[in-house]
Structure formats: structure tokens, C-alpha cells
Length: 90
Image (cartoon, rainbow, N blue to C red; front, side, top):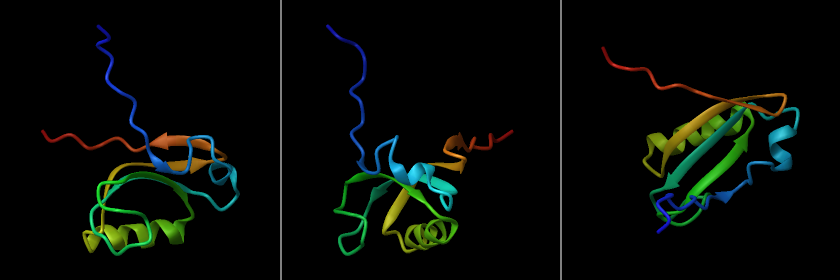
């Protein structure tokens, strides 16, 4: 038996997508689509996108409207992915 969990298949940008290395790219998000009428996909789709700062702000607005739920996010600096660490409660 193989005990390794299945690899998540994300829609949107591949981890080595050209968008990751473009000058304006500053953020990466991985998220789940929650509502039907939105530009990202169908409910239940898991997506990854590399975004400019203004696109990231639009994604945050979509999250506030509960159209998407951001699961992971990172800063992008010269193509390097710097994941944000969640703050721990004391």
C-alpha cells in the first residue's frame, strides 16, 4: 500500500508559470472558489495565481465577499516564493 497522500491538483497558474517571474508580480495565492458567479472558476475549484499588488487587493475583496477563501499566500521577490507564516496563539 502507498501511504503518501495524493498530490493536490490546482487550477490556474503552474508553480513554474511565466507570471511568477514577471516584474510586476508580488504575490501568490492558493484558494478555493466558493460562489458561482466570479472570474476565478466554479465552486470547489482549488486555484493558484501569481498576482500584482492591485490584483491581490481585488482577490482580498473577493474573499471579503466570500466568493473565494484564500488558503495559502506568499510574497514573490524576483521569482522566489516566500510563504507567509501563520501567527501562533499563545
